[in-house]
Length: 436
Ligand SMILES: Nc1ncnc2c1ncn2[C@@H]1O[C@H](COP(=O)(O)OP(=O)(O)OP(=O)(O)O)[C@@H](O)[C@H]1O
Ligand SMILES: [Mg+2]
Image (cartoon, rainbow, N blue to C red; front, side, top):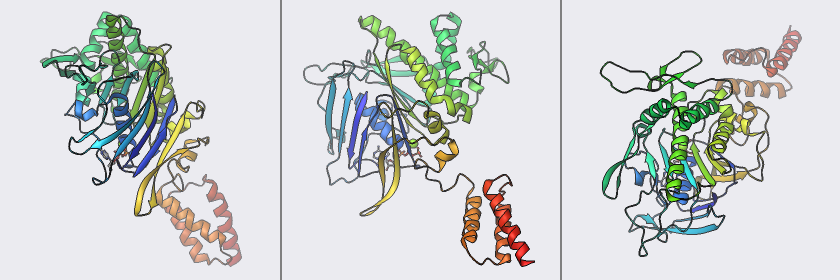
């Protein structure tokens, strides 16, 4: 589990400090203020590897670079290992090596770490397979540092060099999913259960029969039975369904492979799981956005019975925040918000650990500190309402001016059911009567 992170002179903000909760951690902030970057750093602190270093085909997850080359850049963090031991590290950027200093070896294991990247790629760090011990005072080179998948490798399989040899380390969703369903073993049950849980209680998605895409394509492609059609080839499924299917697959794959490796080593499976999910709502319909946090935690609980799960997730969705309200507990959970603020030399992102005040509706979240909108409406409607409110404050209002603002309100398509429009209609009626 990641407990603490402090960055200086690296990333979009001059300085950043986060104390994570042991369970749910939500990160909000405008585009480009560093949410994904923070998840990359969290992954590095937990695994000592940058995703892009492990898999060069990735177009994100690059090693962090200092902002000002003339000043020292540092990353401090605290990780709690599976044995409950805390490990504090302070790493400095070494410009000549273009690397972050760390003592060799891995003296702790953070548990199973799964990172769902924003673009559909995944990174997995497995304590049974990626943990290593120092040899002769240095990190060995023949171990697999982590499993880092580009979006297409999640579906088609991942090859890596292991001990100098090209090795297929994961068969990919298409192949594994087909094999699991044919075998009708426990994995087939997991596919059903995890898919069902991630799709949420209102949408039934079930694995369907194997299908062929063309007469020349020999692959048996898994299909899905959807509410609107049966046997939809999984490669034809929508972006939202593919996101859910890929999440389900990576959760099952990492859990299954960890279990097999732990058994081979004669060890107990890990009791700690860390999920990093970037853009947890991406491609999901509001109904799914509303249940995705609960679903992810429920799936992790189901796959890793008795293990504790820490979830760090970046979101732009007011519904995700609203959906967290019933479970949010400041003892276990945290909400971090990044805003662009003026500092001495100009504007810079600033991260705050905010108090999670329940807003009740997604609409209220839009106008909260999380998203900072003045109004949860179109820009035109917001401007028209602001102008109308300004008129309401005036003592003398020329009828022409009021009619102009009324036309703007109508043009902005504000419906008569909008509460402000009732007040405005009374005001205009009185003004018309007075001027008649
Ligand atoms: N490897 C890196 N080293 C240093 N700074 C980086 C690195 N990667 C990203 N950044 C900084 O982070 C900024 C981008 O932040 P990031 O992609 O995390 O935004 P975000 O909050 O996730 O935005 P969005 O909501 O659009 O996904 C860049 O402008 C850059 O300043
Ligand atoms: Mg991002």
